[in-house]
Length: 182
Length: 344
Image 1 (spheres, each protein chain N blue to C red):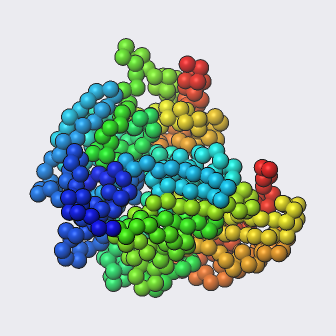
Image 2: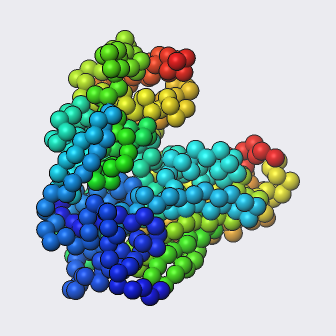
Image 3: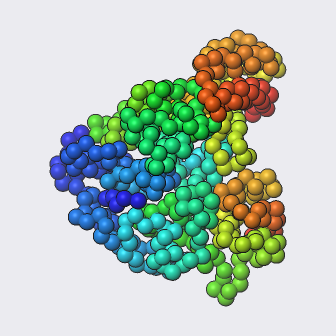
């Protein structure tokens, strides 16, 4: 396969060319978070988690391990739960990002999952809670919350060092009923 | 994490062209692989943060769509299909349960929502000496530096397929299903597409554990194809680990059986077996398969097959338990598969 040189060149309109002169120079990154546009200038290495916390001022998503092992940074991309710490911010462009700050209604009414975590005392220190709640919202939406065993299996990516697991299962069940009834 | 050039490719061809272009710019032999494709990023960014991998160019292929095609001849899984999508696919769950289970029992739902199938089979070992750059010795990370695991903490390490240079375990689950089902891999490169038996994709460590696959730097996995067969429905993946979920296998078995009369003590016509958590590469247990062929599957024949599978196993200070655990895992998987209710 032989191609004219122009076709080997980076496509225009991309976030970056292949060999920009300074790899440390900030690049423009547009993120849509909780319905709001954020135009950021970021080092290309910035993860979605760091972009949210350090550049968009949204500190609800937590950094636990920063290596995809704890789930504290769980956010939704177009409704799919993913780990912010293992997602490059530049690769999250074009998606609707939902963080814990975007879950409550405009009037401040809590999402049924947030209310259920309060009702069932599904946390102690609270550090894992934003990730737990977003993960749980997606778990119900995926149809993976039908039994206690399913909830435990499909929530296993969210660790809770306070071991509030039984209460988290109870909270997910309560919210599931309300979300499915809604 | 070290800085890198980033390029987003919208098609597989564009990704390969970008790789060729970026590799052209690498005028001297760099340490490690200087140009990498990134899809889910779940291995790549983890290892870049640890400074185990430090590509100078990342080519983002996450925008390329994958696809699942199912026909009478078998299954075609696009490399960019996410693990979670294939794990939940109703026809894969029914007709190829070993594939669906190997994916569903791996990682967490967040990671399965991110990770691509192509990236999954290329995930790197979890060997602590590979992942921690403060250890000077790792032949996989620094060729020729030695292996700290041989005399170190080697509880999670391989008992099959190891060499004096490397005993790191291949960590994946999906690969064991692919190798058991005789899958092929479609590889796209600058000179077009080539096809390879999945069993030929990974290289045993030998003296060069840093070279893990036969892929060239400008080649991209495009898809996996799995041939249909009477054994795919009577198949399962059994995974034994330190905790019940979200952990790598200590031992696992992917098995697929064709039994005369479809169960009820009939003779084994065909047995396909992959073993995980115990070997340096995705592992096909052909000796065990041969031991079962023509026999009724019961506790004794399953145990004999397991003995054959691990006849060449070698245990070290902390991982010798995996030999017996691996045998028992295979026995249980075979007996459970024999008892499966297979949909008509």
